[in-house]
Length: 149
Ligand SMILES: [Zn+2]
Ligand SMILES: [Zn+2]
Image (cartoon, rainbow, N blue to C red):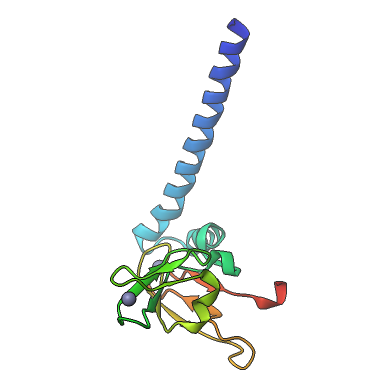
């Protein structure tokens, strides 16, 4: 009983220190950016650290939330995840996730800051789907990277 309790407390302590460590790291990233004209080496390390946190994702499973046009009623349909069913919120139209390419893509939403993303294709002759998207607000970038499939 006592042993179990000690173990439990140790786990909680460990989790707390991990959390605090992460929070400190986060503050360290934000602080030099806020101060504006700090030394360049701080700036560099801040950018490096930010890059490892959320510079982007790749693969269809990580595709940003997409808005497509409903072919029946022209309403916007938000497909949050690439493998979700595509159901029109206004009419009865419903599509499977693999019918995505047949629908008109109206835009992608940045999963980090929720801004509209710029998107495009790299091989329109080979693939009929969006292959990349970039957020101009927070620099989040997504790539389909078909060569890994
Ligand atoms: Zn509809
Ligand atoms: Zn963004």
